[in-house]
Length: 145
Image (cartoon, rainbow, N blue to C red):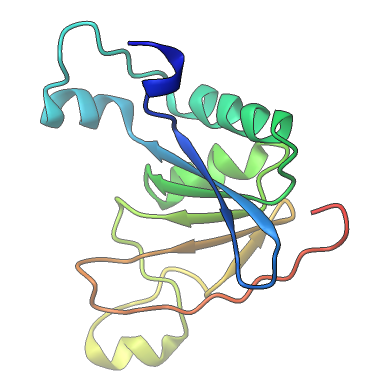
């Protein structure tokens, strides 16, 4: 497969105000290997190394606003993704961690933390589970991204 036809782990999007945002997709290596049965020769790299490489590739393209769309679990988002320079926003999944106010407690859905979390200068949110709750996230960037 030539470089032009290779699937990239990121996409660059222009949002409504003209800003350019890079989006990286990261998933759990072992889960993907065990459940997706990749073709022989398919390489799945470690999560943090993949995320770091993605950020470097986007920055090389001139992108300074980077969002990680992850499926590695909330604790891994906090441990791995928030320590990567260049990441601005992390939207996570996999662990079914609900973020939000204690209002959800009355329905038997205990929130793990507030929505959104700011960790190491990165905004962290999760998608919770099965489209039960739809969140809205408004993010502002400074001149440097």
